[in-house]
Length: 439
Image (tube, rainbow, N blue to C red):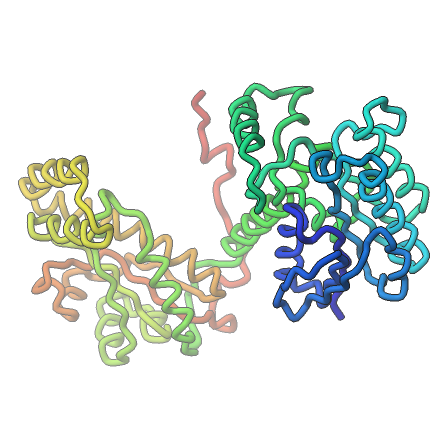
């Protein structure tokens, strides 16, 4: 059963971003919007409760949820009457907190403002400060008050002077360091992200200043990246050079992903001077096994990949890749064309063996990427240089295609019962022995 959220102020800049995020979040099944007019949102998750928010206490029966998000607020220009201003900026959040407490809603998150202080002589700051006090006095278990600086983002309203001021303020951003950092402009989207973070993580903090809002907004992305990094390391620790495979077929989707990763690998000048032969024919695999020290993985694998490099660089091959780039990007670049001429005046004149060695290095880059991609797919591989390249070239007719075999990669699933290497500890140099830091 997913969560239910209440939003007050979903039509505002921050509220719009929050609503979009909640709709996209699989943890939420229902979102209740309390507003004075319909937003016409079409999501099946959204229920709109329309009425006068100045009498929010009349909606107590509908005011049930797991979390309340309050993004409501006005401006002196929109609401010049101070009594009405206070009824909105103080009254609505305060009543919402009271209803949340009465209806046992455990999480209450409200957007206040930088400088909020109930003792301030400035009406705006004083109103926000009094609102904060009213909210905190309800002692809701997970109460969070956000104090953003100037809020940036694309508003539906036309505010030409504000846009000019915002542009100037953005230019000053790099100068706001140290204690001034909290005065930096903050995007409404990041306020919404922080509200989501607080609702899901529930940290031990109540008042969140603007610089902290920015920091918390980035945490989910940072945590996701760190998780991905850990996943990569875990996969690399899991993989090894399988010495025996069980013959089980790898699903085509996984093979496609592995090959696609190799296709996307970087190469010198983007020339991709190699091709990948994907072999499933048992007869051909038997022939290759005979010239590959009779290693069983050649025939017991699901797919045998042969990375075959160009035998040399030619003007035709170089031009073909440059023309492909121009076609895909639909334009010619003078610097790119000058670089084409530089390569044409260099590579074709070199010795063919030197060119093949260079092309093989590019094939090895893709080969390494394919191994990592296979690990992500929980598929085993066996990097192989132990074979007779000339014999493999003859079996596959590579020389007639201007190619030479560089390295083999059997792809499949380990046979743990017959593989002596499967349970042995992975051995690698220590970081200290491998890496030299030159500063």
